[in-house]
Length: 110
Length: 312
Image 1: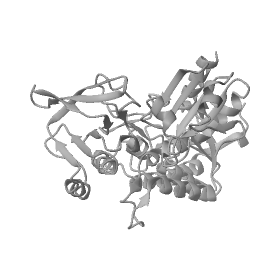
Image 2: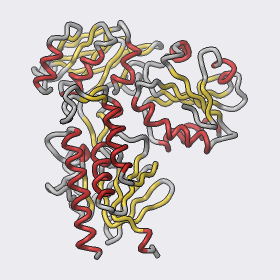
Image 3: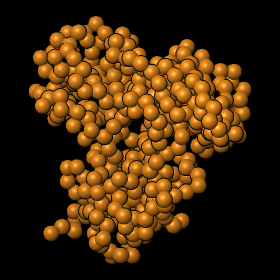
């Protein structure tokens, strides 16, 4: 599922891969049964390439990993959260245009 | 100076059923065509579970699956596609321009198939709790409401079908409708009426979404024709109160109705010759997949004729 600049994360790797990360991390919370999640997947893939070196991009399947979405109160997917120094920096709910996601990334990456 | 071989015969804006059908017919007609989509293909099909009224599938078909089939069909005949957002159109000249975030395309005709988005309720708390209890996609978010009580707002096909879908997860679904009866297709209404988990609250509007740190806790209701109010405890509210057209990029020379839907004739031609509009974005009575694909085929055919009559 994940492209070359993307990683899959799980409830057990979230702490290390996301919260402890030196770079900001965009986490795409998704599930296989969610059409809009699949619709934005190519956009997320493109962004992971365009921001390589400045931002890590991770996918979290909420079906297999219920703890992490629950910890952040996620009740809708796709939800994109950009974590910076272990904290929520930006959050986007629903399938939105690439420019809107890029604007949120620019704000977080600064 | 634009070189003639850089000019498309047809640029299709939008990769839902209408745009993909236009693309299929354009590709088979060997028009020089490109379809622009900002995300994945399928349009509003991506947000629904099952399609039960598309001819040829008596058992119904997965909405996502139908979207994949329609796009595969168009691509099979060589339709070119591009992932991009359309920022504006220049339609005054013989050769028209489609402005993208990362460049521009020149074309003899344009087919606008940009579809529509679900309308917001426009009440207090709606934006604040979006993603934390307020939802516009039952298929995406339904599984987060297992054994909970939720509200669906609306009385059309989408509202009633999605209410039925939500009963797979929620233990009670309240359908809140501002009128005294549903607008949904009878067969959809019949199914919902037999579902013991669905209850209907008629003549009622939602005035506020309330909640706390954990998300939505209740909705405030008011009589549509009166002033009596009450609070309904729910953890989720799904909003299906109609659609609004996606036309932010279209110039005012392309005429719309007061709601912003694009006016066309029965050949899908807009007020600007060489510019066509198809599917949910245009003014029409019945917005369905089956009518969208018909629009797309009609527009592609007429775009082909326009190219032949004006450019050869």
